[in-house]
Structures are given as C-alpha cells and as structure tokens.
Amino acid sequence: MIDTTPNVSNHRGDEIARWLNECKEDCNYVIIDDLDIANFNTDQLDKLVVVNPFYGLNENIAQQAIDIINKQNLKQ
Figure 1 (cartoon, rainbow, N blue to C red):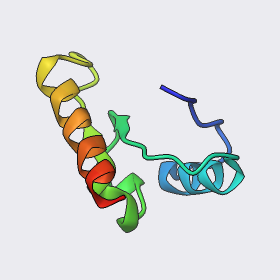
Figure 2: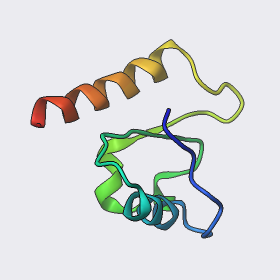
Figure 3: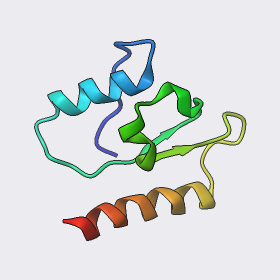
Figure 4: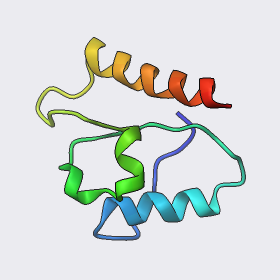
C-alpha cells in the first residue's frame, strides 16, 4: 500500500482521481473499498474490489487485488 486518499469529497471516485493527479509517482493501483460502485468513476471500475464492510479483507479479496495489479503490469 502506498497511500490512502484524504477525505476531500463526498464521491470516492473524485477523491481518488484527485489523489492520482497529485501523486508524484506513476503507479499501478487497486482500489479496495466497501462502498458501492456508484461511488467511483467509470474509469476506476476495472481497478475496484468491493469488500463487505462486516468481513473486510480475506484471501479471495487479496487475490482479486493481486490479479488487478498483475494485469496492469502486463500492459506496461
């Protein structure tokens, strides 16, 4: 994990987009969140893993996140 986004917006997708614009590194990323996909920008959905807020991270969620990062690495 590199960072978490600051609470600068009521819309999580806008918050992430702002963070990416300010980020000094060009990085692959995955979003792990417990909010519905409606809270994210359409260009972020392929990098989103939604978790159940009561169960949080587990092995399946971690594997989904790893798969997303691996796909991004293959495109480079």
